[in-house]
Length: 258
Image (cartoon, rainbow, N blue to C red; front, side, top):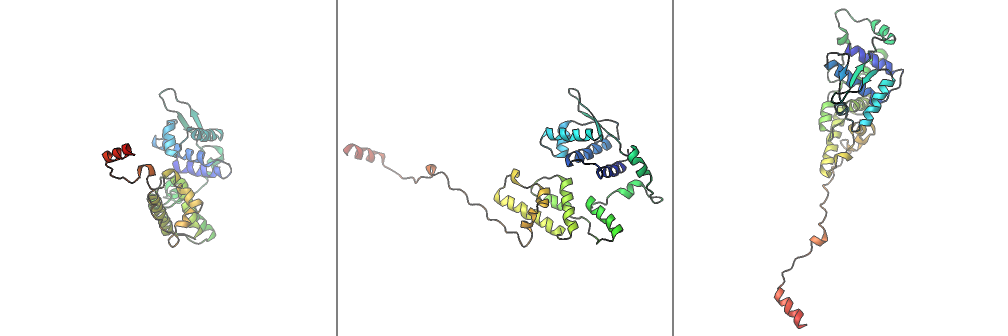
């Protein structure tokens, strides 16, 4: 298999077929494992490893995504025996009749490999790369490449789905209404807020939703207001009563003589 050509064929397939995002991510991860194995016909990967790679917390979500790929005819699956991981075979889209002619018909400059012509520049997202290709055809305004995405990820207060976050990050930049400097500042300001307020991780927004739902606007430079540290709650009154020093003997005499 040719890694780049398979990805290209997959993206072309998605243009005419519906596939939810989870199965799409699973396909990319399986392609990655196939590449690491030296393109073995079948690769063994257990469910826990795939769930960790996809940042999925429920096995049912993985099973559903796998079923979607099988139904679409993109992979074959063999359930592993006891003590042996499941096996996957990624079906080559390049070798199918639908895409073989499309890939082979493309002409590349002499001396330039197929891989070189398709690899996205380092530090540049897929969305930015596609925008540049559209720019060449439609003379649309140029856009600076993504340069600070890694800093955004490191500044954000929660681990995130890199693929989904990068898509939203690049999409915002494509609007031309916000800069990378501002997005990185938003991530830092949000992290500071979570730290000051002691926000539990489960209540921290996922990075892709932080961008997609425009939550970041509240943390833009000029709009962001640093929160005050919450005051400590008073201790339970039962344990906070005022202590007095009493003479027990005098109290006993007073009670007896009453």
